[in-house]
Length: 335
Image (cartoon, rainbow, N blue to C red; front, side, top):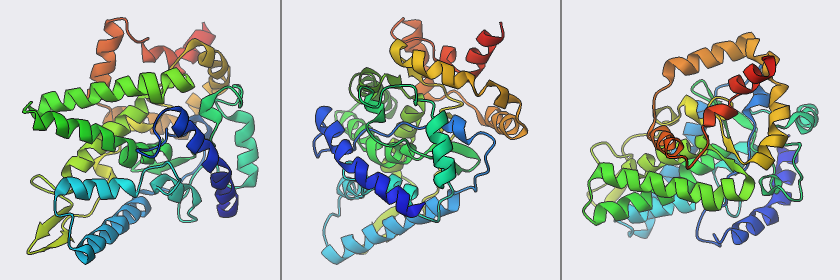
């Protein structure tokens, strides 16, 4: 699998660059996250990768601290944040997600030739055209498990890549003197606008609320990376040092799972996705799936992203995402 994954990543490098250029991103930021399909992983065993992924991020933090101390510059926190972001943007496939897809240390689904062949037949976006559906111009992201939550590896790019822009918008608002709450609201609203018009719905036909959740949580990771009451890295006595290790458990929630937090689709996309989603209705009674979703429900909360989506739905600016949930699809078919 590692060799096959490397070949997929190599084939998709040019596609990622093309997508980024088409979207006007150039070299300034992360390419759009790949599509993912958590339904395929239903009923399949995955090892929890929290500690493995944590170790990777903490290794990168150690390397960053060592580089900063060797160079003897970049003492400003915002410069440190940007240096870390540059390590994880996805444009040239040098980020956290690429490592997670290629590393033999990471348990993921699909994995291995047999499962990959099955995935090609069941992929929830497999009914769309590979030529005209921009969401299929790059390979789909596999599913991994973090602290009991199933999520696409694309969320790692959103968390450490796209989230940088949320944080930059947040900091600019704070510099203008607005309150933290208002700055947060501005960043979340601007992020939603970008996902609707540039990175998601208008281009691929999918507005992923799970992507928005990862973006939001990543914004706070960058805010607390080197500032605040409990930063990860600090500058003391002329040196940077790692003060507190990173832990994904502080950020990942059930809302990162696209089989639990439904996407919003444009009609042309939904017409292709819905029939494939119907095929998973019997799996709702699978013991593993039931237990997972019950555990999610206990951890569920109303997030800032969900509050904004509800506001947009009430205003008639977005369709209700609940209409695209697996429960809604299966109930409609049953009646």
